[in-house]
Every structure is written in C-alpha cells, then in structure tokens.
Image (cartoon, rainbow, N blue to C red; front, side, top):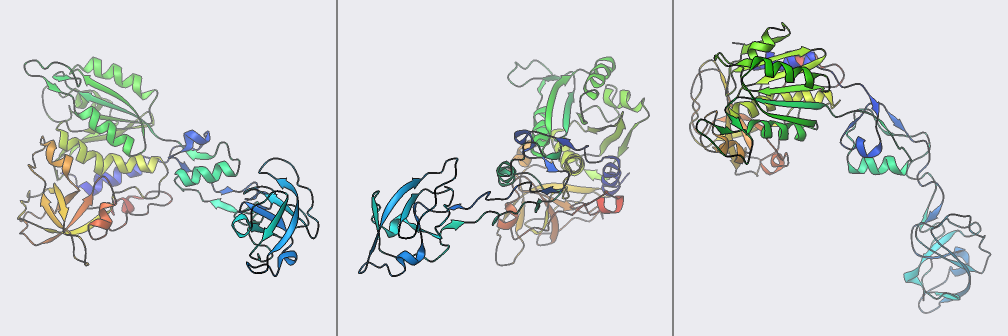
Length: 435
C-alpha cells in the first residue's frame, strides 16, 4: 500500500498556485496577493486634525490653565470636507473637525475638551504642545512604501488598507473553482422522502462545505447515478469550468464503482490503496490541467481524506504558504487500537489544557468510517502510527487540529503549519501534519 506521505507529496507536486488575476476589491477578499503591493499615494494624504477642537498657534495659549485661561477669537470653521482652509493668523483660532485639513499658519490643535467649546470665541484652559493632535501626511504610509508582500492573505484589515490606498483591483491568486460530485444511485437530496435502500446524500454537502472553508468557490452535484455514461458526461461538463474536481464514492472494487471505471480508462487518474484508516481507497490525477480527487464514499473517510489531501492542495492553489492544519502533542485518555500496517486517524475531544501540559485526547465516539457523529464533535484527529501496536492510556501522540484553530491555544499550543514557500517539492510535502 502507498504511504500517506507519498500521496500528499504526489498531489502537491502536481498542483500549482492559480494564475494571478486582477480582481475587484470585494472579490479579492479572502484571496492571496500574487505580487508585492507598493503604495501609490501617502496615508494620510494631507495634514489633518486628529481631534475635534481648535487650530491655533501654541505660543498664543502657552500659559493656559484653569486658573489662567486664555481667550481667542474664532475666525472660522474647518469641516472634514474638500477644499483648502484659510490660514490661521496669530492671536486667533479656527474651529476644526476630526479629519479636516490642517490650516496653514497654525501649529497645533487644542481638543474641544480643553476649552469652553464656544463658536465666536474660545477659552482655552489647558495648553497644547506644538504639533499636538495633527496627523501628518505620510506618517502611516509613504508613497512608494511596500505595504503588503506577495503571499499575504487579504482579510478585512488588508482590504481596508487597499481601499484607503485607492487600489480598486489588486493582483491576486483567485479562489479555486471546485466541482463536488457525489456518486451513487441510492442517494437522495436532503429533504426528500426516503424509499427502501435509499440514503440521504451527506457527502456532497460535507465536502462542499469543507472546500468552502478551504477558500474555494464550490458547485455541488448530488446523487450522480451509477451510470458510466452519466458520470462521464457530467465530468466533461464540469471540467470545462473548474479548477479542481472532487468526487466521493465509486473508487473501490465494487461492480458499480463507476468513478474508478471511467477515470481509470483515461490513463491520467491513478487509483491506489493507501496505508491509512479510514480512507484506504484513493484516486488522484490531472485531466486537461484540472486536478481530480476521488475520495471514498463512506462519510468519515471522505472528510478525513479531504483534510489530508484536498485541503492542502486547494490552499496551495490559492497561493498560501501554509497549507496544512497545525498539530499538537496530546496525551491519550484511554487505550487506542492500532491498525497493523496502516496509520489511523481517530476522532477525539481535547481537555485539560494549560500549565504546559499536553491536552488529553478522549475518543469522541464510534470510530467507524460511517459514524459521522464523532467527527461532528471532534476537536482533532489523533494519529496512531502504522507500527501495529496498540497505544496505552497516557501515551503522547500527535494530533491534527480540526475546525477552529484557536483550539490550539486552548489546548496547550500547536505546532505551526509548515511553510511551503515557493515551489512545493515533494520532501516539503512530507512535513504534513501527522504524515
């Protein structure tokens, strides 16, 4: 059987970051910058007031205090609006709003709380220092500065910065367009009425959700019948408009395993048995430049396979440097059964974090490849090596964190995901969490 490490390495060597594109700012949210971004303008773009108050000369109110207030005439208002404010003469003040252009002549802003707040004249009871409450042009970003490097994920703060810099369409690696095909004539859509021998299609919903969480744009095709012609026709259609295709089911040795039947005939998709549990039957290949992942049909097998093989590939296609889930060391709460010759990924809950001690991993429920309830409440997949011996309680093992990665800090800290960097060579793929 092929090792998990080798399968991950083969996949990452076969996929590449998607070609850079200019995308509108809203569409670029969640994408990865494909080129260094330098500021075309300064931030702020002009000197402006950091407070509501009065622009004036600091020397005119140098001795102001509650016992010795200083009163100046107010010669005008400066709103946060387009235009150039009039100069402020010595011995006068101009009322100014936060963000308004700072007027020539003045050298400070006294905040309104240090005054009586009047409109015709103002009494200052506390002296500001020269330059106080003034945002200087370029003090945040100077024109030409490198503000975001290539490889940076564009979250809310980064999108806000790009907008402030008047960048309407950054160059990014787009989100992968993923087609999810769930095969099986026995499947019906959620909400349908079950007949004899039918089951609700959960795989397409679960894998589609996992792909979205990995940053992909997803189209879901549920209940593809066990017909070679039907599957082949649908595959041809989706390959024309997808960056990756994920199938579930039909990859083993059954008489109706049409996915394997159709894709093996192309000579481009290889089907193999991996030394892992759950998820032994796997397939992967590239058809017309589109990577095709064929996952097992058992629900847990499909999602565990996604975590190990598909999620890293999709993140690499997005241009992310870190593609794998973080890991952490855990202590087993009970004896764990090994699967001789195969690496096991067991669903666990984590407790007892803190004080520098590893968290304790408790089996989350039944570990069968069909038992979704345990995976739905699991914090992590604990990895039982393929050595063959059962693992006693109290032993330290590596666990692959799932879902909300803040569990890492709550569970004693996680080893960061590997930094893939430039081209993903096979030996770097072998640093996969738990692989």
